[in-house]
Image (cartoon, rainbow, N blue to C red; front, top):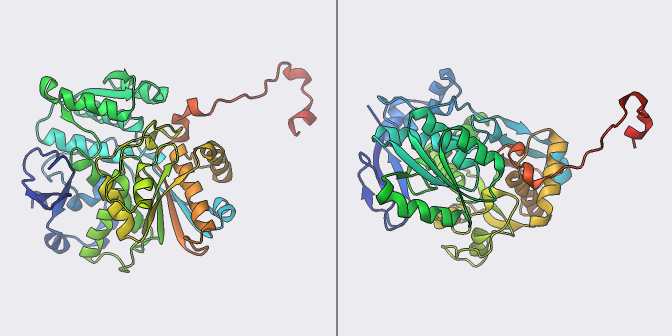
Length: 407
């Protein structure tokens, strides 16, 4: 078969849509990609994966790009899942792991979603793409657009980390800084669709970034020998990764590839400087009201309103998980604590998850013996503005008193 995609489905009401042409939203809400899982089950087994290259494309039957189209790729390897024993001990969790997405080609998990979105855009003949971004998504889109030979436009809040600005510009994108938040950037992209004829790669405004992000869940299942962890703690801005993983787990269960029907509890973590999902969860609402005056050093969490809000909340509730907000004022110190404990370049968004684990253990919502996985969604070195350093200077190397260094 050329593809195992059967159709697209509106997440809000189940409307079935044609998968063989460009689709974006239905009723202003996201779409699911659906597959013929029965046919996939007859064509491939989980054991077949062992002989395939260790990239996200090893799951090709469960991805939307037809087999006769070459992916737009920068070599997206499987990100490692690393035991975090010392950090876990400090949090009261004996079996803590970090899946380190910072090792992907553009330094963050955004490589997954944007390689899939750009690959599918190329398949449909798109030549110009645009994105609103708070940071890493813009750099990933710019890189994959360059790889595909596409023209790229990136709109980001003017206080977006300078490294994110630089990587977009270096990749040849037309980059614009906006006096506002990511939602204001999204408004520009939406208004420009007709006059600029670009394809909108915004989070969940096309159906394929979910499919790239779901490979985090496919990898995690394989890396843990097809036994899913008890709890997944995930930093949430637009929420594509959490939504995608929950979808992946359901597909794996339908295929019979999991050794247990037990599903992980999905925990959505936000900063209390921008926590629309956590607020909606606490209020038992399915949709989240926009957050006013959003502010956090974790730029990936600064999403005042997510188009897939109900999909995030549905996954958290269906899994028996939750959505929580952690103190913004503790994120920086927790990042330093995590990196110094394990040597993993934990970003501020992942540091928020560390705070989330600490809170849930304290509240007895995570048991000490449960297997817990935190996602490190990006590299710490992309956030230099958030962590200014004042390091000591050795003015006279020849007369250095080494006793002073040990103090």
